[in-house]
Length: 213
Image 1 (tube, one colour):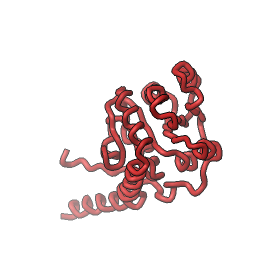
Image 2 (cartoon, one colour):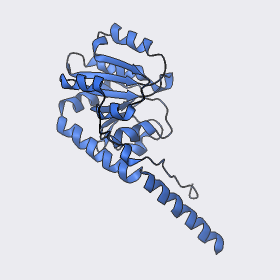
Image 3 (cartoon, rainbow, N blue to C red):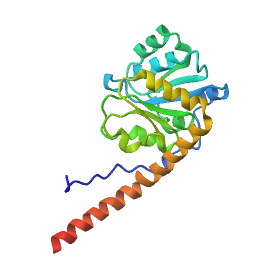
Image 4 (tube, rainbow, N blue to C red):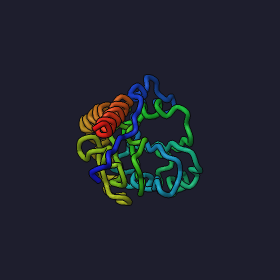
């Protein structure tokens, strides 16, 4: 372990909040809806249905909350689940999109429900877009998201806690903005392309210096 170093992926910081929005999502927000989005291809490991079930738990208590699903794959079962749970009109399955940065710019909250992750690019992209994050404690997620500082963590499959976190963020705009702003700063500092390059250069220099001694 003492000979292992972790260098995180670097992201172009200028690809953080997009200057333009997504017209379809902007229209939803302009009608007073609060949008929680999940960007992931449809696979069982992503547990996207947990977010749909959390939305259903909040359909009466938090009527402004809507969920946006973006990603490749067959979303029909998720649509069917939404209709079955009575929240079909608040579940927006957009499929694969070529304007993901613009979509992120139109969201209020970023969500990831995966039961297993390495180090999620989606989380960093949420953070660079200034979104507060709600995600599972799986894999490398806690390395990107600090609970109560840049987002809120919950245990895999705990739909009740997921719903509680969403309810808190929808109800407290100031807290939502504070987490999002902190997340953006952290992402810009820790996960920028420059930070990644500097870390590689420092490691190479250390190795070369050790070899020359």
